[in-house]
Length: 177
Image (cartoon, rainbow, N blue to C red; front, side, top):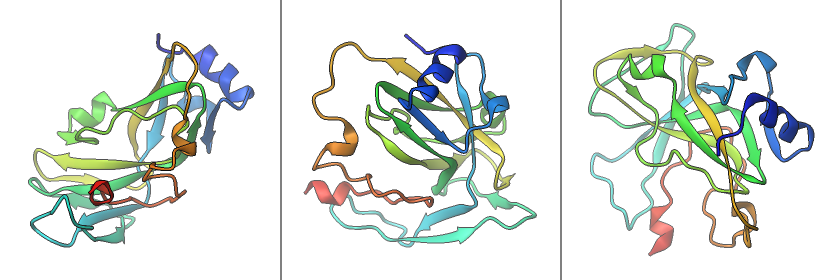
């Protein structure tokens, strides 16, 4: 079941969902709008290796925006820090973003109960498009879970993305090997 705006607000009041900064006008009837942070990143190597730590270069989006290119992967980050203690958060692109040919995640749209961080975005585009820091980029949807969670994400020893960082974070797949 997806939480309604009323349920999201009640869970924020209880501290079970945290959104910083929280702006009431960004709350939809069953989602919360998130925005593109000021930092983007690209991988340094053309060929990425799942068994290696692939390093990234970060840069700030200038005030006049930044033109994303097709066939290139960009890592972005949400302006919003979030915590979810009782629900499964899903991050989806806004329809207006999709209509510009922007995909904000390749496979990582679902968070885990206990995810407490900024969201790294895996951004790709169909054609050249200019983006701006602070623009609406996605929406968070919260699903109820059935049953108790034995190990929330933020307490898993194997969790690779627990360090609170307001910048894009590269793949940590290499830690699995």
